[in-house]
Length: 334
Image 1: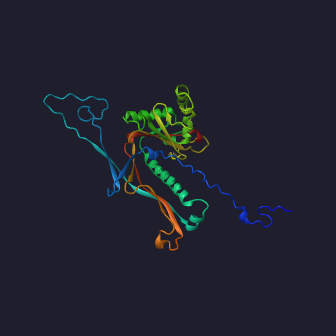
Image 2: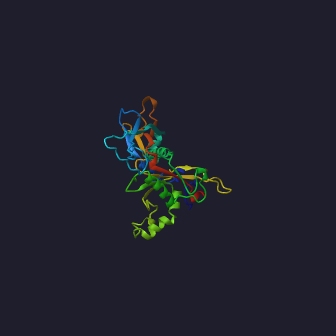
Image 3: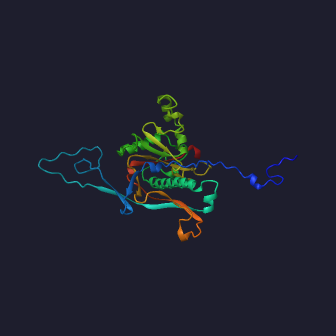
């Protein structure tokens, strides 16, 4: 007797439907490091579109006249004679908030008959996209700062060449710059380092870092960062935030022989109050959903729904001396 097989001898196509795993795969997203470390501020309702950050510049005692000469002591007063007055200085930095967003349309049939919960999944997807977008907007402002350190002996981006990698020595140099500018650390007494996985790979092979964890770090797999998937903290006062959103300048370094110019990575070392992130208090970031049947005459047969995100956002560099951009290569580009 013949055995009936799927798709053979009259078996219908319906019997060949593909099985679906109802648990959808994870979407891999970059860590939003740049949004995390900015000063968060809001503009209140009816407060306009712009915000102004103000700072009273330091008054220095040198010569009693407000000179910025570091470490100089004031001059003695002349008995019975008052000194020349000084002028206090106020600096301001302004930021104007704009709105950003994305949306899509979907049909009532997809909503009702789709195998997956389309609206719920895309809501999560848009929430992730919104975080990523705001982080990239913030990154582009932060990395445009003027306080630049080129790795190794390079004096420009185009001169960053072979072997000029991110290492503990480069981070210490950036920290020295921040400390000479009297910039305090950000979190738990540590300066923030924002870099990408390729640069992190190089840091993980720096013996000046690994030897400390190996020979002087806490014992045990639960406390020694050598056993973690990536370093959270580095020796000598650095906290690392690793993200693929780190700015990369493609084909910008010194040509490596017959090969094309390598990419140059911009690692940020950040101190306290380096930059700010601003939004409208009355228009916070949100997901906006209009289901089929809610659009009136714009959707006369209740066939179309929309889903999207909208956010108000501005990023602004507040104090150039509170951040350093290290431009370097990685071994992945050599």
